[in-house]
Image (tube, rainbow, N blue to C red):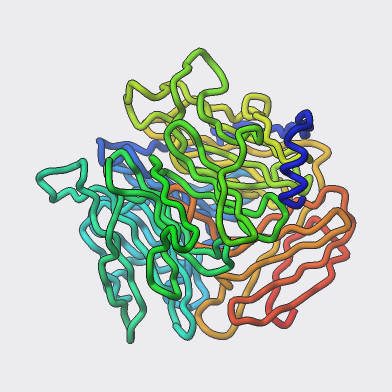
Length: 497
């Protein structure tokens, strides 16, 4: 749907969407909490990757002061748990750091970060020193990565929160961030300043179509003098008003990026305290705040009698009914005992209607958990084409939900591989899926969310379409196009088809 059409339709009555149904599968999983003191008020992410190479996603859950948890997917919502003897973990992101074609995990911690090199069959080894990566000594809460042109390995960004060694902290004491660039057989580390306490970072194309690093910063600790940041990767500079970038101050927590207006540009959802902000990408390369009438703000609990503002954390777009329109999950929960914010703050599942408006359905779908949620993942855990849901909670058990929606639409799961070079998982590619119902696209990226991300197929709901065309803009400039006559399957594509 074009942005102009969306603006016109907002004056009409909301269009109801099919309500998905989720089944609580907690009885199949060990109890896992994200726990700890004030250094673990934030974080609590989940990383999704197929480390067992069986075509099903495995899960890595941060544990805070307790152990992290690796869950090996054995199919049909059966998982084999393994404690990971790493404490102080705030989150983790999967990517292929060493370019060997096996996914690794960059693990964020309070203290030295750790790179777990994938050895196959969900075995990992600490390769931080072997890869020449400066582990740092900070409180790491954000991560993203990208491949610079001509580089054999990814450039890594680590966002650090409050400087724990600053005696005048925690307010006005945001630590420097860190950028790690491949050099020789290792990495060169340099500070990236100013740092305003990022809780999420995402390297992806912006509204100008340029590769940009977006930082969502927590105003609670920078207090004054800070703002949301956009850093142009090619020019190596922060954007400002002269670039059309208007400075905004948020209690920034998470980032979710996807084109929901159909203009070919990725819109961005930012979680925060009180209003959650949806920025619509404009064709002149700028962003504008979405109108309140779109129903996206999720600014207060939608259930119960707590009228205080909400606190949003992980956000993720995903088509939970496969009708061809991206829906939105938002994890909610008080930081701990903040009296000005809602304590009973159920998670949101916002369904996108044909008019572009969003309606709340978490209570109807069975996922309106009022616990202090943090990280999450919408991901097809069973390979049946339905997006399931995993939610990590602070001082409460993690939740695992199976999507059991009936009469669901058609779908495709699109996975990319590049055999040459080190960017074998094609980070930075854009995948376009065209059907008789219209076109949609997604960009393959590392980062975003809150303290956790996914490596795996891109999920496209296709409604009642019967065939599709997949076009890929590959990171090296190649393009490919393939017709798909059989839907409801995972498709693995390479640049030559």
